Every structure is written in structure tokens, then in C-alpha cells.
Length: 370
Ligand code: TRP
Image (tube, rainbow, N blue to C red; front, side):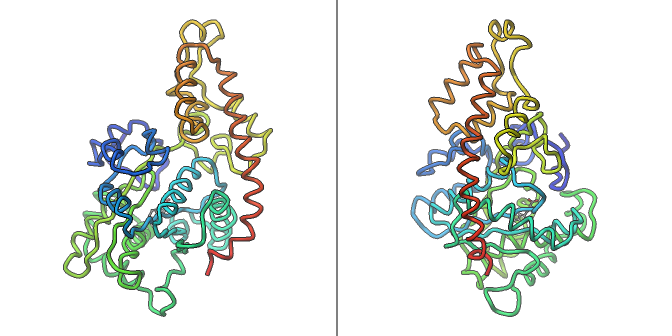
């Protein structure tokens, strides 16, 4: 992969180890033991990297105040890849974090060229509704749109002031080194994302405190820049450098990226049982042998098998059971067809319950939109 991460590109990340080395992200495993009740994605190494997470782990341990802030680009159907972040958000909310959830509508408007109306609809009907169904609570949750942010009811927006003022701390050359080719829209979006990440620490939002930003690794360029700009602003504001964690992406069904623009790459949270079955059977990449005979003899490769990965990353929370599945697939005892059916059953079980929760969630959306 290139020596540059493009947050707006469509590359699928493969070699996560190399990312740690190339960009100075710390491996997550060593901080694991400092977290009182680590999330499944942490335990299993799906969250593989971090910057300064020690600070957040200490804050959690001491039960002190902290913020979890992250954002979403509303782009089409909400799928199980998006669920990974939702699960982390509700995990931090459960630990008592104040949640800042940003709808990056200015970014999407500039980069994806969708209309503001369409973006708002997708953000609410797909993202927010599913977040609520997945357990997001209105208490301690500040859900906002980039285009509408103001300072808790005061007229002037401290957030936009921050985006404007902090842009003085960087140069075109630095931005080009991080992002490559720039457009005015990208520059705007970057400065606003810097404000997204830092504004929970403005006096208007309660002052400096530890902030953790859980994201996919494609967002790391923004975190590197934000941390540098926060360090350069110390004389004016006492921002604590934001912490971050990085999770692997849920692989697309065919391998590659799970992407809202290709329905056969994802399982949507609105897919029906028949669709899920068809998608997994026909499209999910298998690490199994070419024939039953070959599979029995040589075994399968769970590490590249998309059905296995989906169980590992999300749908089989029991550590003992997942280990058994891994070993039996590896040895050839468990066949691809059996693994796929197990995956279909788990996903459809989840989706059936989720459907009811989503119906209920629709009535709660207004509680999040002041
Ligand atoms: N750029 C992010 C994305 O493409 C969305 C985003 C906007 C964000 N502001 C943020 C993510 C702040 C984390 C923190 O998905």
C-alpha cells in the first residue's frame, strides 16, 4: 500500500501490521490489560491500534470524566461494517463517557456531492435509527450535524471559530504531505473535522478532558493532523491531545471492502433472511478446499474466510465456541457449507430481533435531535 492513507479513497486495507510501523500507530494489545472490561473487538484484536489510549484507560479505571467523539459520513445503507463502530459507541456510553456523534454532512456534501436533504434523511433513517436500535441512549449523547453546530444555544458558534482559527496552525505544504491532492472542499472538510475532534474541550463544551476517537484506520491522517495542531495551540487553549483507536474493517463479502455502493459486498441491517442466505451462499468468499475431499484432507483457511471473519468479528461472542469453529475449520472437520449455514443462522437471528428494535427506535429519533 502507498505511504499515504487517503481518507476519501476506496482502498481496502490488508496489512494492518505494516500500518502500525509506517504511521507510528501503537499496537493495541499492550494496553488491553489496563482496560477494566475490554470490548470483544478489543479482546479479539479487531481493534488493533491506538494513539494515547493509555490516557483513556486510566480515566476509565479512575471513573473520571471523558468523551468519546466520532463521526459518520451518511452514505447509503447501514450495514454490518457500520455496526462495528456503533457497538464501540454504546460500549463507551455504557462506561459513562459523554458521546459526541457528528454527522459529517459538510464533508459528504463536498466530497460525495449528495444533496443536503438526502444526507440528512440517510443520517437519521439509516444511521441514527440503527444506532438507537443497537443501544444508543439519548442521555449523555450529543448528536449533531456539521452544518448546524452551535454552542449549546448561544448564538456564536465556538466550533466554527475553532475551525477557522486553528487553520492558521497548518500550511498548504503540510496538508499536501498528509493528503496529497487537495481541493477547497477537502480543505474545508479537514478543518471542520479538526474542530469536530477538539471542540468537546472548548470552554463552551466543558473545557479540557480526555477524548477518545474510535475510527477505521482510513481516518488516521485526520488524527495525526489534529494532534499536531492541538499541540501547536497550547499557548491559546489547553487541549489534551485526543486519543484514538483503530479497528480493522469488516471485509466485504467477496473480500475487498464492504462498501455501501455495492449491495453484494455488504449485509445491510435491513436485509431479509432470504437475501442474507443468498448473499452468503453465493458471494461470501470461502477459505475452504476446492472439493469436500480436498477440504477434509487439507482443511480450510479461516483467516481468509469471510463467513468465519463475520462470526469472529461480530456474531459469535463466545470465545470458546469461536475457537472450536476455527480449529474444526482448519482441520477440515467443519465444511464450508456448514460454516456458511451457521453464519446465516446467526446473522438472521440477530436481524430478526434488530428489525423489532428498529421499529421502536423510529419513535425515539426526535429525542436526539434538539
Ligand atoms: N471523516 C469521517 C468519515 O469519513 C467522518 C467524521 C467527521 C469524523 N468528523 C469526524 C470521524 C470526527 C471521527 C471524528 O467517516
